[in-house]
Picture 1 (cartoon, rainbow, N blue to C red):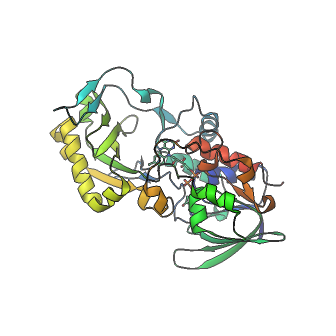
Picture 2: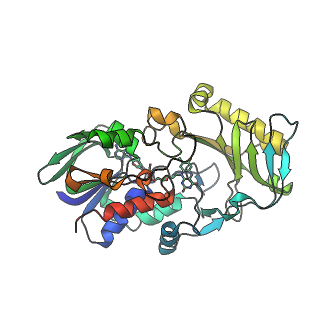
Length: 361
Ligand SMILES: Cc1cc2nc3c(=O)[nH]c(=O)nc-3n(C[C@H](O)[C@H](O)[C@H](O)COP(=O)(O)OP(=O)(O)OC[C@H]3O[C@@H](n4cnc5c(N)ncnc54)[C@H](O)[C@@H]3O)c2cc1C
């Protein structure tokens, strides 16, 4: 069967591209390597709860992000603001105890998706034809033919399947595409250089989620927000649902990927709980559950080069000349190719919309 367009990757960018192509009645399929959709959008369901908590992205900023604001409205996805009521804490290694910071938090204008960011993925997927959203299909090779592109894929148990399309949109992070998919003919050197030099946003990082029966930090007049130069968690936030439990905190590790790997998840959790005890008291030592997601260890997000975090937020902005290959048959999307807000959820939408504009009717 020949498709008008094959979309590689079923993260936000890939599913949004599918949503847009469906509105144009094009014949498409999404090929996703993981057994689940969402890519870096990934929720964890703790013991005794049916709610998903974000191990990937948490925040969006609808005031500055028109596309995600429109999409959440169109899909009927409910948003709520990040809990910031109460004082934040600042931990300095040279001071005996954490300092309280009163006043408005910089996160007071950050919004979250009710039911976790995965609810956005569910809402998008529910509007797409199930049989064309193919999970467990890892794309290994693309071959250019005179009349289209042949896509070779494998399932986790090694079953090969070949697809054919007029055009292909890749939403894989550029660096991951360059490293893990064989392109025949290969990409021009300038494009390959650019892709290899493009860090995948947040791929170097790891998140710690911890669950409690009560929000004891709020009871002490604290927001749950912490900025720490002591660690192991350098930033901590309240991750609870808007109205009830399970109450949760999440934190980002300050340790680099190599150090995290040496310690292992058990030791990282023990050190994180000790830090939470130092900050919030003994109640922090009685979690009902915890989870760590280290994105640098996930080969469907990170490459070896992504173990080192970029110094700041990279200026992504893929030049138009590098946005396609093979005379426009192969089009690159994914958040890291966006012109504005690359790396963010908004960038994933923007890049998908730009790519869809390059797909023939
Ligand atoms: C810990 C963390 C926190 C973050 N916080 C925020 C935040 O608060 N706000 C924000 O805006 N952004 C945040 N981000 C960034 C945000 O997650 C991304 O911008 C967005 O999810 C990217 O979507 P995407 O579809 O472009 O890429 P991805 O989600 O990476 O999707 C790519 C897809 O391709 C699939 N794939 C990979 N290889 C293959 C293959 N060979 N064949 C087929 N499929 C393949 C992957 O499985 C994946 O599903 C965060 C990211 C992380 C990891």
